Amino acid sequence: RLLAIFGLILTVVTLSAVLSQAARLTDEVLRAGMSLSEFGGLILLIVPKMAELVTPLAFGIAVILACVQRNEAGTTLLLRAAGRAPRVDAAVIASGSLAVALVLFACASVLVPLNQVQYRQAFALAQQQGIERVRIPAGQPVELVPGLSLQVEQHREAGVFEGVTVVDLTRPGERLMIRAERAELSRTGTRALSLQLTQAQVQQTMADGQTTTLRFASTQLPITMPDPRGLIAPMLADRLNRADTLSSAALLRQISAGDAPPALTAELTRRGAAALSVLAFGLLASGLLFARRPDGRRQTLPATALLVFLILYLLIQTTLLSSRGFSPATGGLVLAISLSPLILAPVLQALIGLARRPATLS
Image (cartoon, rainbow, N blue to C red; front, side):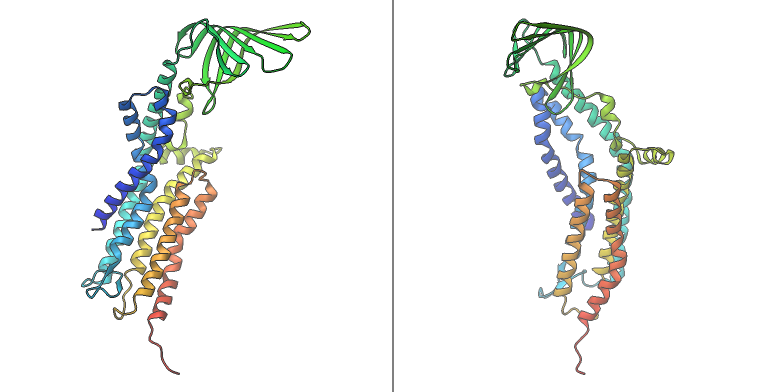
């Protein structure tokens, strides 16, 4: 029952996380010229990464739903199924959390990094195909922004132009003209491009007619294309040299060698913290939700208190593990929260025992 609930919740939450990324991909890729089949394939490549991120949340919800039931009379909350020993239910939850934690760490260490390489290659290729569909009319000036126009004589290949002229009239009383034999577009930001000019000259004409000419072999001109199809992808090397594309063994080797970027340490910490949080949550649930009770009465208050604590603990873990700015400091906080059940479980059990103790007259 626990595995069935976990599988169902993991599927729903993963699909929700994937769809939340679809809008961003639609803006950056689909409008850049992808076909619907290519876009669908790119969406499918996100699924393993999203499943990895939401596994702690899905497992915690599954544990809560599997543990909380009503007793036969339907009057009070029971924290375990009637008719079975507490150790049996505790062993099921503990072993299930251990299995999920091991599988999660294995997938995050090997399978997801390989999948991220494929995703980034497909993403870069899709955006590159977008620039291949960009055509600037030869001999016709294209206004990039008011006062700044671009004109090309020939469009040889994707993102490569010949006979380029850039006219800048944005400054009052000044005319700036740049001519280049060859120009190549490259991406520098979300909507920003860099025009690499070779064998070019710049001519500055002032209001009094004074002209200054400067020749150069190569330079870069930052521009913003009005059409989002003008976007191209960064170099593949930049996209593949990411911490989430490396296995945990590779991360550990680079960190042990010294001088590793902080992103590598943060990624390895995130993977370990995610698996540890699943295991710690299962141990907390098995230790508290299945504690032996002298009778079946007065369970509503302790059950509600435990559920509130578990939900808050789960939300904190999920927020920290899924945050974009994950760092070693954040990882340390996650590890501390993950270890907290081992400290808090005896305290909570003692408090529940005091709450169940019948009142006596002195």
